[in-house]
Image 1 (tube, rainbow, N blue to C red):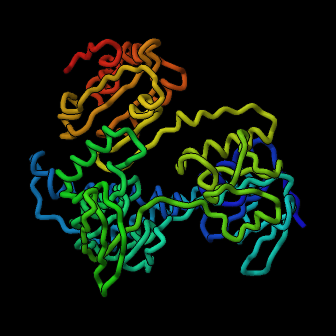
Image 2 (cartoon, one colour; image 1 turned 180 degrees about the vertical axis):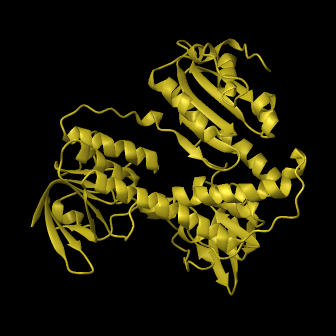
Length: 467
């Protein structure tokens, strides 16, 4: 029986990064993955393929609607769905191949099979060519999450689908209903909306992207209705989903208590994700889970069994690939006796629609609820020279700062390249910068990031230069 210093169960961004860092720190490491390719949900049926489709669909949408404004005249573009999906698959293959390379480079043993605990230090691995057992002094659970559904919905994965199936459709739906106005639903809805689908979003909360600052959801709703002709229904609770041949009928109750009926050829159920610990044998190792099925961990991400850790979507916190990566590094370094640092308040969130949405820190609603005295500054992209040059003038940057100390407490942006711009805000807040600090830093002109500086100027003492 092979013995390891550490075994990592699950090869998503949290798992494979944890394995790499463990190996860098001198630990003999095994990475166990039940699928034939590494990378987990993110690389195979999540972040990477969705961004490939988002980029392709945005090119098509611009060719159809924006090229003429730039003086580019072309025949009406057509979409080749098979080529669209072929390119997506190639991006996945290249990215997953890169993880294979990193495992070999770091001398990590990759074992394909379904892992389950025999006890706290022994793991059974069910493989096609025969089961094996390994011994691991420490184990990291990084098994991720799966799409959630509602109790009354039957997912046939043909017409009533999850994000996984939405990434591999063979046709562009004429009409698509998206249940859930969060990140995944709006991103995949955007893909098919750009390609020509009539998209209807049904959201139970009173706003899109309800976990983010309310101003972001309000602006995104306006832009999606304007640019992609989205039909958006908030404060609307779905009561039934029924497939009738090649149609899906969704019934919901609106804020007034009235029933609304929506019909489409596809229904994407996007109501969140659940921790995935199926057949992991946690009870054999004595590992406890909470009432939501998440693995219980302490501040060091240790489970109820000291030599077993858990990271990523399977534990509390935002289900984000970069959060899982940071936790993977944190756990590896803690195992090695180092003193790693993580600030969950400074993990950025991003929605890859267009315009992009990004945020870090406290929302305005959170600050009000806490009773924190703050000041707010904002700057619209319509006042940005760079945004006008690229014809991307929707959105704004909002900076929230402490009313007394001027320390930045939150940054919220919707606009062009917000996904990349948010990193400056994360760096600033990691070093506890004030709005004045950002306002006094020279930003290149013309750039989108000038909007962050202008918002900081506005937050400092309402001295933005270009509004």
